[in-house]
Length: 153
Image 1 (cartoon, rainbow, N blue to C red):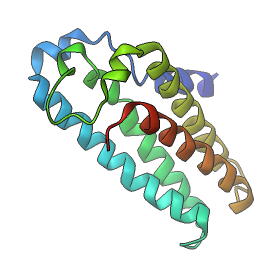
Image 2: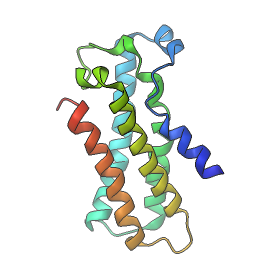
Image 3: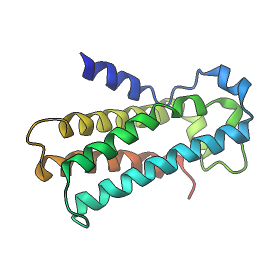
């Protein structure tokens, strides 16, 4: 039950119906906030990716910590995706995301699901490199899928 609740929380990462935040923050500030969250997530993903590639020694506690860190900040993203941020000059979000919010949301849910799977498996007894690799790769591929379609480089 707890796993389902957590999955629903992260799965809703890209919800756009948080109008109160649009009234509290200027659109430029919301974009900066969103980018800051993604910087934190990127730092965590860098460690996870290096672990999956064998560039750093596998440590199950570090993998779990990085996955939990990503989960903790990912749930903050939803409040930053409000229509007022569309067209903000410094945003890396492509217009395609706003034009295809269903597809964008689906990719967010795929990321949330993959992340929750990594969090779950990393908390199991006997968690090892063999179990970590595919779970990490799934998270990173879900990140890339969204970047490929909805992020300007």
